[in-house]
Image (cartoon, rainbow, N blue to C red; front, side):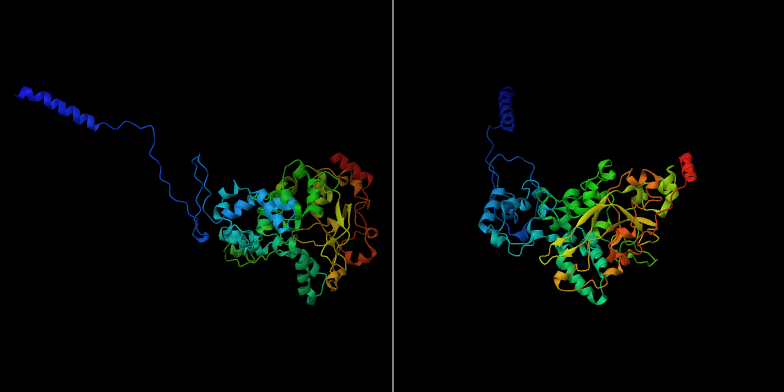
Length: 471
C-alpha cells in the first residue's frame, strides 16, 4: 500500500515545482502609461533639470511660462517675422534678441524662467506677451539680481559705473553750488546711457555700445573684455590697451595675456559700502565713503603690487632707485595716448570732440599720500566752457577753477619707450613736458599747478660717467 503511494507523491512534487518557476520573458513590453500634458500657470511652475534619458518619439515642449518667450526668441525666422510685422526692427539687429534655445534653458538663470526676471505675460501673441515686460532687469538690481546676489547689489549704488560720480564730481568742481542740481540733471540727460547695470557687463553689450545679447543670453561670470570693457572705454583706455591707437598694445595684454579684470576687480566694478563696518564689523568706527572719482582714495590697482622688486629697490635698475616715488611708473613706461581737445554737447545729445595723439608729463595736480609723485603723465580732458550750453544753461561758471590737463594713467605700458632710451630724453629737454607753450592761452591760468616751468636739469658729463660705471 505504501509502495503504491510513493509514485503519486513524486508526481505531486513535480507539479508543485513547475508552478513555482518564473514565467519566461516576453518579447514585447507592456504598453507604458503616459500622463496627460497640461500647461501650468507661471506662478505655479517649479523648474526641474532636464531628463538625461533619450527620447526617440516626438519631443513634447516643456510646460512652463517660458515656452512662448523661447519659441520666438530662439528662432531667427520667428524674430524676423515679428520684426517685419512690427516694422520697427531692422533685420540686422535681430541677433541682439536671439537666445540660445538649447543652452540657456538649462543654465542657472534659464531654469528660473524668463518671466521671473523680465515679467510680461504668458502668451503667444507678441503684444500681449510684452505687457509689463522689463527689457533690462539689471536696472532694478536690488529687487531682482539681489535675490541671489545680495552681497553685490547691496553696494551697487556706490559703483562709479552706476552713479557716474566721477563725471559729476569733475563737472561740479567747475560749477557753482547753486547749479549742482542742474549739473546732475544734465549728466543724467547726456550720460544716462553710460550707467552700467548688472546685465550690461554679464549678459549683454552695454547700452552705450548699442546693447544686445552677447552670447545668446548666457551669463558671463567674467565679463568679456572686448564686448563689455572696451565697448565703453574704447576711445582711450581700450584702444590704448589693445594697440589700436597707432602703437603696440599694452605689454600686460600683448605678452602677459591679461585682461581688464585682472587688475580692476572687486569694489572697482561693483561698488563698496559707505561704511567699512558693513562688511568688517569692528570697534574702530572708521568710515570709508565711496570714491568721488577714480583717483580718489587708496591707489588700486597699483603697479608695485605685482612688481615687488621695484617697490623694494631690489631689481638692480638704477633709474628705479634714483627716481623712486618722484615719478609715477607711467612717466617712463607709457607711450603715445589720445588727448581730447574739447567736448561740446550738441542739441541732439551727441558728444562732439576732437582728439590728438601725444604724450606729456606734468606736475602732479593731486599729490597725496597715496599718490606722492612729483611728475605724472597728464592728459587733456574732454571739456570746454560751453559743454552744456545746448541744454540752455551756463552751468560751468567756474570752468577755470580746475586744470584741463589732468592726472592720467595711460593703458599702453611698454618696457622700453622713447623716455627710457637715454637720460637726456627728459633731463635738459622739454620734449615730453607740459610747458606753457603747449597750453591754450585761455587755459594757462587753470593749469598753473600742472605746467612744468623748467625740465629737470641736464646731466653733466661727470654724472653720465658715474651712471655708466654704475650700470
